[in-house]
Image (cartoon, rainbow, N blue to C red; front, side):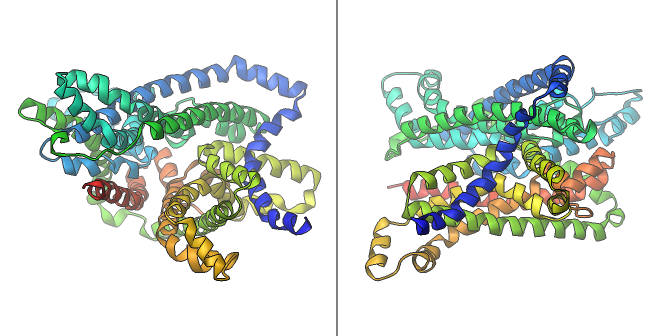
Length: 540
């Protein structure tokens, strides 16, 4: 029994590290007193209604926009055939490489009062004052989020429609149903679980965002958490706002999980034939399909990249290349360390789950899978609150130094948030390893760590490499946790891009922003290649 408990000790440590930030946020309510009640009443009378209303309006608008854009694009490339369809299949994924705050910086630089477009229009037509309305407002944020996050909906809906929609729509056609009715009564009901899951993912990213909300001056919960902690120096208020945000994210996560289960239930690849091919479009219908597919790519990727290249092409010599190398090194170092640790934890968890799928192991794996849904703002509060409590009780511990003056705190936050990304990839690799290999290895005397090293690891190399790449890219783009927990004089590309944009130095912000986009393109290219190979492999 003692040996069993000793073997469970690493598992318990992993569980404690992953769940501590969330528990600390909820534990802040145990510090309830008259002062806390006064703070909560003041928040309820002043900022809390604005945070709730703004976040609600933002989520409704982004959800509707992402659902419409993503579903229309997925239906166009899946159900119809037109020139350029194969190119649009992968091009529609390109906005995944663009962090939302980078898109916000690019459009602001080009469309603001002093930007090149308004300056040119005033010079050409003799206009005075502002030609276009202010970009940095709630409608502008909605547009940024919609064209940055619609690929979540597009990816899931495209997968759902590719499974069975063509065959069922062909059956409906043979029964005499017109095209509009086939789409309305066959394709859309099949895609409804995928739409729900994709919208839930997009809304979780929207609520977790800090860069766009802060830069556009929008009063969301994430921006309010940072304002309460850093500007108002009120950690209790920040923790209470974090609790509200965490509960909302939990509701969205439950909706996404339920939709994914329904999606798995309705999915089932049917063997296609020549009679179940996409409908060939002609004439004006082709232009409509090009607009539906080309518009999101243009607004979500091509134009932002072009806007950022403009100041770079104007004067390359004025760019801070020496500091750029230092920023890049800091980002690469944090990404590499976090990716290695996250993949190591994911492999150990997946191996333990395969060998002894008990209740404790499944619980820890579920905790790790929930980490990606925890917003960066909540992570910051959840990690710094215990540090403050421990510093008060034990001032000589130096825990504040280790958490804020070294990379320990920021790497911990990365692991809590991104171990789930690595775990999903490693578990998909394990799903392709037959259990009979484990039985054969044990019969030959290979078990325990040797089983992982000699049997599993050679078969998991591709999955672990993909997991490391995904975690690395996510760490490079992470802004909220990095902004607060990074050590002194250790700015990353994401932090520098935010700080330069906040100081209205958008031309200088283009260089680190483009570097983040280039890094983000790598997993997008790999994902598009995987999606293009899957239909080919499934053909008879």
